[in-house]
Length: 392
Image 1 (cartoon, rainbow, N blue to C red):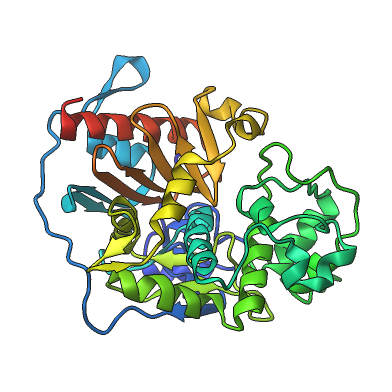
Image 2 (cartoon, rainbow, N blue to C red; image 1 turned 120 degrees about the vertical axis):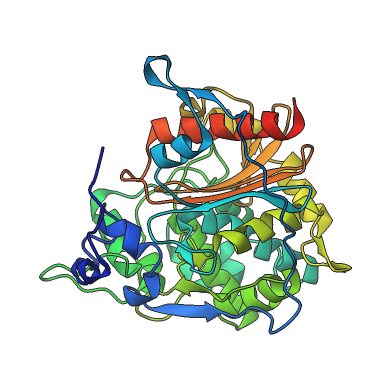
């Protein structure tokens, strides 16, 4: 669907909680989240920013077949997928970087559900430090959940989207307003995410079954992490990931009305810093001589996702039956070359190809939350980028 852009920054006054995720308002909103929602800053280091050496390539050989036999260049693919910003790294160097729709190298952009992948990395750091046991029941950290539909679920179930939770329309609406991402309608009230979770008394399927994407799982995980550490999630990301990896810019995270982090989709950061996360993973979790993310946790993400749970899950058909899995907030393509990726609605992605030494951070403002055509085109573009860089 073609949507006219906002004509000027003055039109940003039209953006509000009712329309910020819809075109054309999203193009401004996705890079100005702090003007719409309550947020908490994630501070970068004062010094020691991780360098991103630049060796730009033209990608003149890039070609993808489009509708009617048309051959698409890389810039045409970026426009077709409503790309706001992209950074491609190869061997730790920036080989391509481009911005559109008002985004700049130093401006943050919401990464939507790719946030879940970052939460998964922080969880691995906390697991290694002994602050959190991912095999423990959620109720160990949140005893308030003992009488809810999450009783019996483990932290691992939350991480891997394998709870048996099912929301009806009323609960989905209550969740939306509890997150502070949607406006309250006449007669509605909410006390935030924690109160919403404690209200869940509906029946559920057994935990530990097939992959079932329930965004609330990661918000609940964030609450458990804040409870067990006694710190805000934003502060944890800052100290455990942002500063140690040498992030360049301040990131931030949206909060509910009570100040609880929106861990399922509220992280906002620059495309370059998102690429740095991919580079950190490419380097086995190490930066500047320090093990930031445990290598064993990254190995677990890459190798221990339940392929059977994925095949039986709700997303398998949408990826054409590829050999895939989902582990700790990350999607794994197990076909060669093996690729890990984070994904968020409206076209947010981070791809990490260890074997080819490629990282692709791509943030967008696609009209539809999930556009199957844009998803397929993006994944085809990743394969073509790989061919251009490696000849394979």
